[in-house]
Image (cartoon, rainbow, N blue to C red; front, side, top):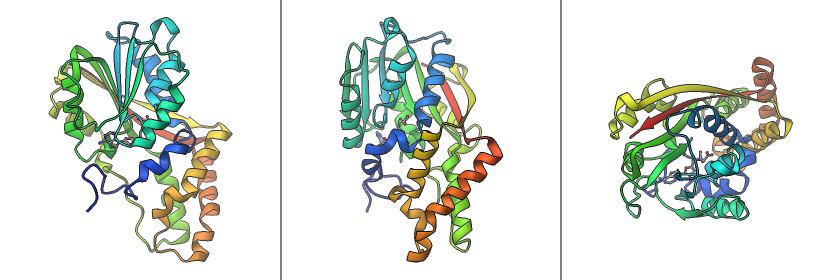
Length: 284
Ligand SMILES: C[S@@+](CC[C@H](N)C(=O)[O-])C[C@H]1O[C@@H](n2cnc3c(N)ncnc32)[C@H](O)[C@@H]1O
């Protein structure tokens, strides 16, 4: 049986371990760039902006995306005094540690932690908690948000994002339809989170008062050639091997070309590779 924290629809037991080394490029920096926009346009304009007295948790951080976005989007005198970067996949935490070695953050710790069980952290510790594009990968999303609520100070701010349109899913499905339209399309982990209202319901169920919750949407169209190439490499490569299940060797050999065609159609339709996200801010 898969370990309890492994999502049933993620293709490999150690999927995120394999992903760690090429994560930022393979996502076309989409999660990083959307979070950067959230920091500037939503967090810093809220009643609880991040500043030098803040204590921030980036939970299910991947290779330190939250901390990287803080460094890229806040002036030095607004950087928080303490940042905890955590993920339950050791290679992600190691990648975060390596990328933050020379960061200007006054104090940053990188730890292997399960977002759904933060029992090593006392109640009310953080002023801000970031959970960026990870909620759909949890087996127990309500538990994770409950831990976010518990570890935030009264008045603290949680920032939770999830996809509304995850472009690689459309591109991979288009490629699958080109080569083997008879086979089932690759499933998406926790597809309910793509629907309006689901994220807010989970956050309310975890204890955040509905009056303190605000949800907006954001769009990111990736036009940068390097970012398009990174996403194409991710979709063409071994991390998407589950999409080629049941293929002959000859069909597998046509996969990269099918992805290129599908990327081209996406760009023709939207001017780039188009992501849409839900951005939820919740005050404790
Ligand atoms: C799609 S990635 C998002 C990473 C990052 N937050 C970002 O902005 O790109 C999902 C991350 O959640 C982590 N993850 C999944 N389940 C987890 C859990 N129960 N506890 C902690 N991290 C988890 C994975 O290891 C992976 O790094």
